Image (cartoon, rainbow, N blue to C red; front, side, top):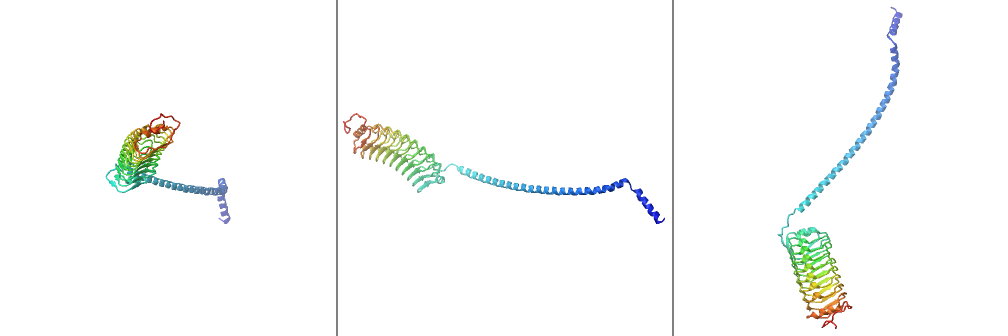
Amino acid sequence: MNRIHFFLLMAAFVIAGCSDDDWSGSFDSGTTDTDTDTDTDSDTDTDTDIDTDTDSDTDTDTDTDTDSDSDTDSDSDTDSDTDTDTDTDTDTDTDTGPIMCNLGGYSGDFTINTQSDVAALAGYTSISGHLNIDCPSCTDLGELICLTSMGGDLFIWNNNALTNIDGLSALTSVGGYLHIAYNNALTNIDGLSALTSVGGYLYIGYTALTNLNGLSALTSVGGHLTIYENDALTNLNGLSNLTLVGGYLHISWNNALTALYGLSNLTSVGDYLVIGSNDALTNLNGLSALTSVGGLLNIFENDVLTNLNGLSVLNSVGDGLIIYENDALPDCEVCDLLDQITSGPTFTSANNNLDDICTPVPGNCPP
């Protein structure tokens, strides 16, 4: 076979092996190239999705910060534990049990300025010196429950939060002064119900007391007795067992005081007797047992006092009488009193209700 025949056979073979589909596939191959470009675009979209995922990672970091805040809440739980410890301490203080009165006498003076100072005297039965209770923040004297006697003075003053003195309910005697003043919330002194004697003076002034019933066991005051500027005090009934005042007796500027009946067992006053500026006092009947006044008798500016009948057994006055400016008191009442005084000077200064007409009496009264 020559070279021409060979090429002719090959050409025929090629023509016989190809079909229309093959040609179509050939055109599809071009279309496939176009799809490839589209795939490229898809790759681009895929990159965009990756960026979105990156943003999601960022949000995850933010959540992590939120968890950090949760750790802060854990610190708050720690504070709660601290509060629990505090409550435990309080319970420990409360469960101290009854106070044992086994420490005997406290030697020297003592001042109470804080509530913890009160606790320092728990268990003592006496104090040889002075006790000064000057504690604006104190609310309770309960830990003084064992105290039965004071060798020196007892001052209870400037205790603005103190509503009672029940912690002194075992106290029977005060050797020196008893001074009660400027206790703005204290309306009674019932805690002194066992007190029988005060060796020095007894001063009750500038208080909110409505009565003195807490002094119902008191029989003697060795020094002075002063009841002064107690605006809410209406009576002295708590002094019904008092028989002796060794010094002067001063009852003045008690604007709500209507009567002196609590002094009905008092027989003598060692020094002067002053009754003045008690705006609601109408009579002196509570002094019906009083026989002697060692010093001056001074009765002044009791605006509604109408008579002196309560002094009906008084017969001795050491330094005379000064009775003046009792607007409702007739002068003849003063004259009658002068007539019954048998011992001591009898001079008087009378400037009362001169307009009243009195029944003439013999002696010092005018005819």
